[in-house]
Amino acid sequence: MEFSPEEKRTGKLSEQRLAALVKEFRAKGYLVIENHFSKEKIEELNTSFERDYSHHFDDKQHKDARMFSHRRPCITIDVKEEFNAPEIYCDPLILQVMGHLLEPDFVICNLTCVLSLPGSKQMKVHRDGTIFNGSPVKAMLPSFAIGMLIPLIPFNKTNGTTRFWPGSHLGNSTIKETAQSPDFIEADIDQGSCILMDYRLCHSGNANNSDSVRPLLYCNYSNAWYIDVGNFREQAHFYLNDEEFMKIPEEHRKLFVRRNVNFTSTFKLLNDQENYFSK
Ligand SMILES: O=C(O)CCC(=O)C(=O)O
Ligand SMILES: [Fe+2]
Image 1 (cartoon, rainbow, N blue to C red):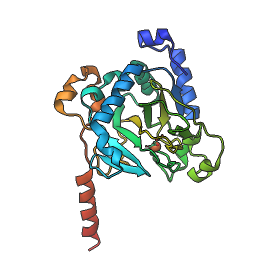
Image 2 (image 1 turned 180 degrees about the vertical axis):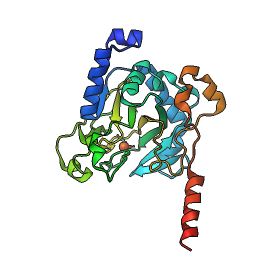
Image 3 (image 1 turned 135 degrees about the vertical axis):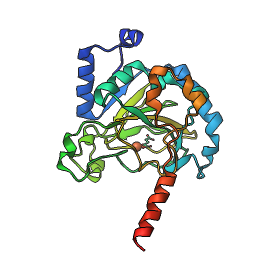
Image 4 (image 1 turned 45 degrees about the vertical axis):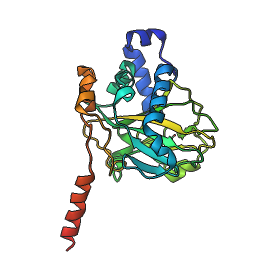
């Protein structure tokens, strides 16, 4: 879908439009939004990414990243300079959609760049996160976290699109069953477009068979009570120092309250406690 010039100009969606988008997202678990961000801004982010994060291009383990799968590190973003981009993370139309899918006090729960290096293999099919796994109410639950996936370069069959299965967020099939289903989508996606994806949707990044790195900026929004501990055991959810924080328009600062939260010491405490109890 694409927002109309009028919607982009006013930064407002009508009640009917919002209701239709919310209905579509709830049924499919994703929305592809085309031609949304300025291509110049995305190109600027891509250039800054190469400048600031090229040490990750060597396929070695670094402190600010977790190796997600083969040659695919997930780098925690330091929200500064060009990456301090409220025009992307606080886009008025996207925030309106989020405000209707999530609870009113939703936050940015993590901000990363998933980088597939040349030669990276297809990822395992996965969901980014789930809740109430043992409970039969699972399939009835509304979204609690939604990713905004922004390719920093155009994604295509050679460098790898993202493959996903519409409706799989409702959890009626297992990941294994879903992975065998041919009913997936994997469309090329241009600079300036983005995918909004329910955290529970089954998906996988395809192999990068090109000679270039393929960076995917991932801004995740969630209800205030949800914390993605599984994907962030060593790294913070995102870094944002006080000075950069103050550059964000006041009305949006509440979205960034999760800055610099790091669970490493918490996990250490828990492990120590386990050892203590097993003595
Ligand atoms: O690289 C992609 O297209 C998807 C990455 C992904 O699914 C993840 O990092 O959780
Ligand atoms: Fe994922």
